[in-house]
Image (cartoon, rainbow, N blue to C red):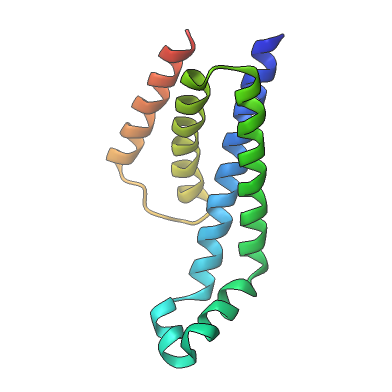
Length: 126
C-alpha cells in the first residue's frame, strides 16, 4: 500500500509542477517582453503588469501544490527515488505539455531525451 501512496504523491508532484510551468509560461508570453514594458513604463510598470496576471497566480498556486506534494512524497519514500522520479517525469510531462498546449516545437532530440529519462526512472523503480 505504501507504493500506492508514494507513486500517487509523485504523480501529484508531476501534474501540479507541469501545470504550474505551463501556466507560468503562458502568463509570461501574454505579458510580453519585460524589457520593452520596463522601457515604456519603468520597473514598477513591469512589476504591475506581471503581478496583475491571473494566469501567473494560478501557475504559482500549482507550483506551491507541487512543493507540498513533494514534501508529502518525501515523508513516505526515500529521496533517492522521489527526487529523480519527480524531476524526470516532470521533464517528460513538460515536453508533452509544451507541444500540445503551448504549441511549442519539440524536436526529436528532446523527445528522445525525455524517453531516456523516463527509462531511467523505470530502472530506478525496479
